[in-house]
Length: 286
Image (cartoon, rainbow, N blue to C red; front, top):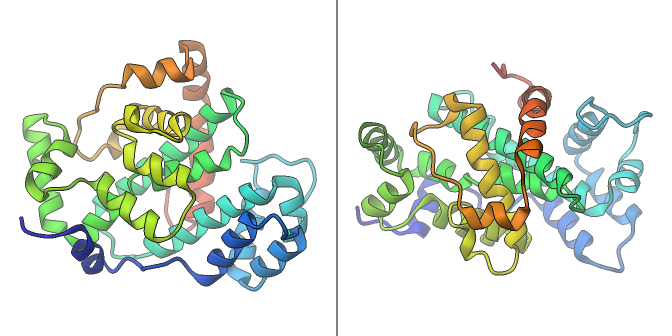
């Protein structure tokens, strides 16, 4: 099929940039001269975003001992980077997930993405990583290229899924053969255009090939493993019905053992249900 990534992105209707309120929050987060008050002031210009962030941080998912009733306090407790990443998560959901007429495959993909996000955050916590929300967001966005492909090339994507189910071949290889690029290429292009942090760009680009990650190997390895675990824990959201084997180097890099994996496995279903309710209030998690 003769189509370029740029043409596909344009056909999909994906925005060329994220909403201005997030762009400003992102700039302030990266500016060492900005203050908590600066970030809170920008976030509070979007009442909907403010309400969603406060709902999430006051949920059992976070379990803070006292109520957080304003964005300034949320920034002080979470930190600027984690607040930025929560804003990114809710912004992305608004852009892509609130279409009432979505095909069932897209809803399954959002389930998979959210499972990957919750698992990635749990892995990061077990590994004592800082700013664990960045792992959540990378997990949530890791398959954004597939969302773009569903919107821009729905017939080709469904054909690729059917081929994968019938043959057992890796869906990534089928995409490359049919289109000349993969959903990881598309996703990396989009998040680069959005000027998201480099750790997210690399995790999106290489979550199937974590050995290629040069600058953020830990983040990419976490998303790679979380993607695999999501397919195991929630097989109904695995579109192709096949699971790529875990790359050994990724597991070795993280030093993950079966005890940690079992702890995560036991925790994520309840956490997934809670976060699904928060991010998709009009949908059922079942």
